[in-house]
Image (cartoon, rainbow, N blue to C red):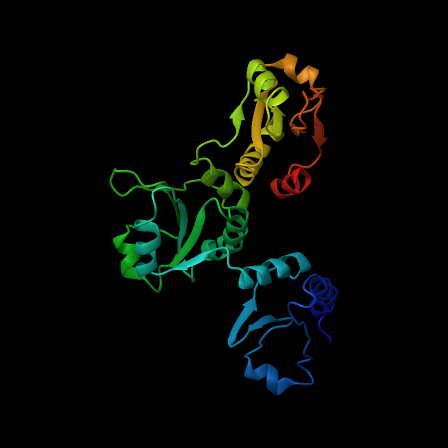
Length: 299
């Protein structure tokens, strides 16, 4: 009770508990009253947040905010990163199906950059569900295997592309930034483009006169926010594949289309639903740049 960080945590814990009402029970334990119980679980600092998952005990080591506590719990309940062993690496990664791709983090628990990467790696994995398989392998536990794989530093991040007839192939990440966003852009960059680049002719034929629903990203190549949004739109294009078509219009190359569509800022996303009649050039503007938010508005 005397600990200021503990008092700061309480409202965040209450906030998190409301989101998971009925799924997980939340409680607090006063270690000044129940010292023996706290000693039994080796509690050495306050506050310490622990999740009991049946017989497994998971200590939370992140920032004490409701959002990050919820992320931690979500990852325990529905793991986004697959913990690999030499056997499962061989089965799932080396012998992967021809159309499967993997991103794997070779790490060691004692390595500080690896510890910093792990929450970002999990965050990235959650946004790539169904697109890229994400795994990690503990090189302290499986040292000889990592040496065999020529892992010489930690963390070593590798992308394993769709299998081909070529020899064992992967790409190593050499970027400075190891945050979820940068890693996701890097991984998605290896996948074939899911959205369609449109010209004035194809925009008219496929979008305005066609019989499919379309979501369109109107952008300019020089625009920074457009470049940041591009991987998010690609993510959306893969999520809606087979149901709604995704297209891109370069407003620098095709200014006339963008003027007719009423585009005044970049990027602008518009939805063109098929309603058995020729569509209006203006479409329906969508004011979010988050793939999941876009998905909700389209469906």
